Image 1 (spheres, rainbow over the protein chains, first blue to last red):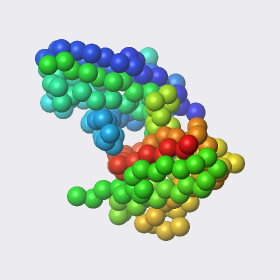
Image 2 (image 1 turned 60 degrees about the horizontal axis):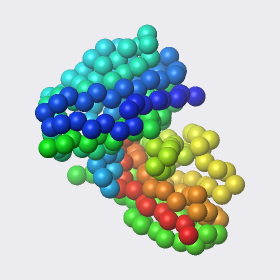
Image 3 (image 1 turned 120 degrees about the vertical axis):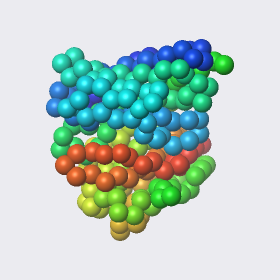
Length: 112
Length: 115
């Protein structure tokens, strides 16, 4: 089955800096790659996703890039703010398997 | 604002006791997932159902865990007997899946502590 690895496990940045979180996946057939944000004590919520037919997607300060050849994808957050502090999970899904395999999470701390 | 509802939110129990967690998915969603979250394992898939049929429960310890979906508005996850290593937050999520996966909507989670 699919295996997703996520790095780094913790990331601390100054407010206004950029943050990058990287994930690799094992199954070349995977075609859907979402990112979820989980604030402390809350539920995970989708913030952005990308499908394998595109290489990049942006939504205001967040963007996701996908490199199918290398089987990795990344989350980019620009102009970070304290409210971006949370745990971020990447995930991947193989076609025909209607469930997500999640990475181990990255705890992002934005220092004011 | 449609949400996935989970009960109980918190449960403290003694080792060996039975624990049942319940989930009401968002009306109209056809797929329901159970994930377990621990500090060490992240979000671990336990089981999921599509149109109430179990599709995969390979992530569950079969000897003590069972998952069912008796109707479209209720999914249950049962642990019997519970053990301290089962202490975790259990999330239910629902979504609308066709040929692939879409957005998952998570409940608030059930925090289980087994003493």
